[in-house]
Length: 208
Image (cartoon, rainbow, N blue to C red; front, side, top):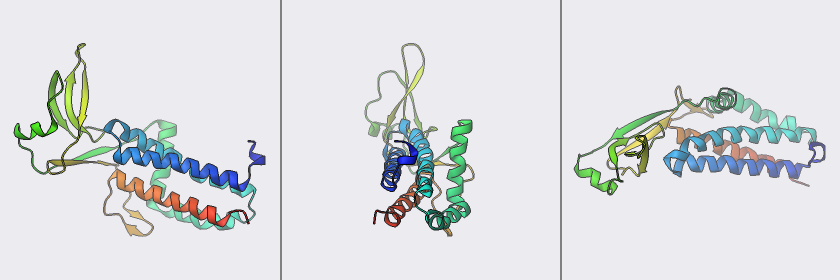
């Protein structure tokens, strides 16, 4: 549909659909398998930013959009968390960069006793790893051609935990200090803000 023929309802619906894509990225980051965590993070960053771009299309239809949006524009511009995610999107799209690190905390690991809790090792397993660049743990398996692939397993909480972090992660959001600066928590705060923004736009500009 040409932009000039889009209605307020069309734009709000498009923002909601894009929001769902960003939320799916958050779901993959938090609950998905290790190999989908970084792709989920990229998706929530890119599509999250697209949500605000879509909403700004209301400017050409709703005469009071700018007056309404100004509060959110200033809030996002001054907020360390929102600014951080805005810059991440630019790095991903322009430079293809997404820097992360993992923090591994081992509560108690007895070798070889605890290895039995991960089930039988897959054929040709050469070693066990905890906390790779995706935040996953599992077995390193040698393939017939000599290459090594990773076979991921769930890491029991009583053994240890692995968390993903950003370099120089933001420490404040909406005037409050962020105690948990892990990537999943920061991403959740980001998505929560955008979700509330879309809801507010829907309420403000719903058809009379």
